[in-house]
Length: 86
Image (cartoon, rainbow, N blue to C red; front, top):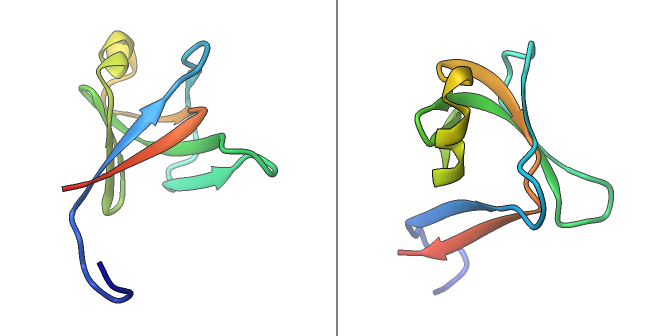
């Protein structure tokens, strides 16, 4: 790998304790780091087990448990974001 190269990656969410997900009135997608930690606030559109943020997609099986929020904007608070190079 070199700086400037393009690589496919798989993004995931890690929850150390509880999954926190809630409906969002904000229709803008975003990722915000929580203070100086590895935790994030993600605002995106939930479809099945995926959260869509414009050109990023996060997938996690735990999101299936929130099917009542499907096809809605949600805020989710993962403890970590994982990245795997394909």
